[in-house]
Image (tube, rainbow, N blue to C red; front, side):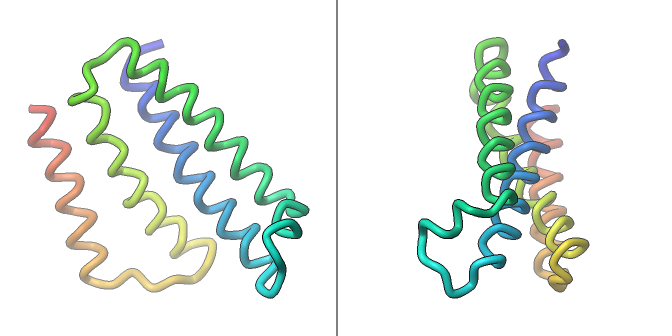
Length: 111
């Protein structure tokens, strides 16, 4: 499997995990910490994080840390997009500019 595919899988799973954990958390707004774990969304979010971590470790074993680590910032961009579609959160101009800066930074770091 190409190295950048491992990074992509990890980033996608991390973003999915974050969105699923959010969904699980809002299912139990007034609940305690133990009832949150009754949500399938919470468990699927944790599974996404676990699988993403495995993919991340595989990428780290094959590539330099300074190459791999900046891609973690893409999770922020994907979570903003996911929050818009799944939770009706607004995308402000600040979020757009910040996301574009993250993407530009990745381009600069990998050129």
